[in-house]
Amino acid sequence: MTWTTIAVVIVIGTILTFATCPPSALVGWVLSKFALHPKLDSKDITVTFNGTRLEEEEKIRFNDYFNEAQFLESNHIFPGNEKLFLHPETNVIPFVINVKSRKKEMNFFIYSYDDHVDVVKQWKKKVASYSLRSEYLQKFTISNSIK
Image 1 (tube, rainbow, N blue to C red):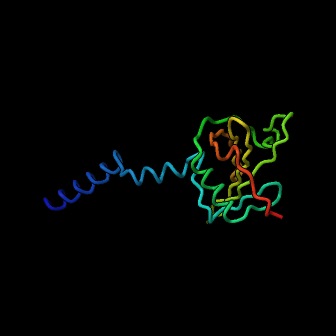
Image 2 (cartoon, rainbow, N blue to C red):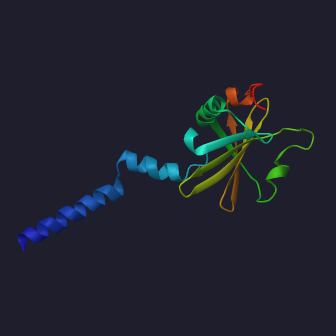
Image 3 (cartoon, rainbow, N blue to C red):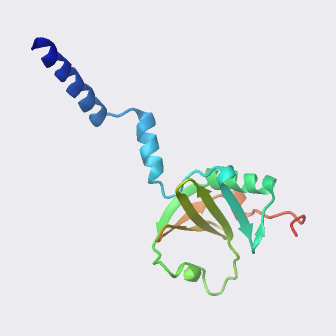
């Protein structure tokens, strides 16, 4: 009886310890699942600009710039009007990142301006928009070797 009581107290104590202060690796993993601006792996993405795929080197460089960009703010957008997100007087062609890995399928539309970068994220039937600051993304150009 004493051993069973001690075992139960140890098991309950361990569960309560993990519930009240979980290890930072577990917390980081859970938070990354709900991040608005996730870190993307270049193996799982394709990047297109104006219907043309970026070459492997440019894709990796663009992905690195996207992952290093600083989150500024979340914008309000309603599903179905992500094409209207642009200001009418600008003709900005977005970079499109398609993410396909396991169960995940997401699209990112990246609109670069002089002072910030707007991102429209689509996954499942949800749409979110946010702004980033990245000097490299704002000035990113593709090479002339794309046909």
